[in-house]
Length: 82
Picture 1 (cartoon, rainbow, N blue to C red):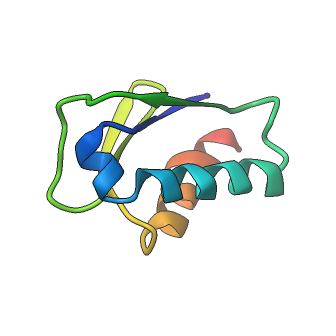
Picture 2 (picture 1 turned 90 degrees about the vertical axis):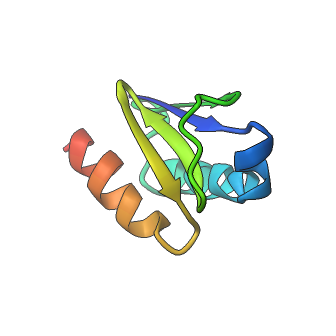
């Protein structure tokens, strides 16, 4: 699974650095290093007023926030790896 986090200027201002840290921590905690590749990307053109844009394989998700990260992790990442 390839997870690309937008680190363009808009997402950067909306907390992409913190989302990157949360994803890195989650990959380690769930021992997903062999299954998940984390990568940064510049603007994908899917800007949202709130949150960060993340692409998981071929699916794009907008508006990922620190507050909604747990749900995103469970529904969009962990559920696909089971």
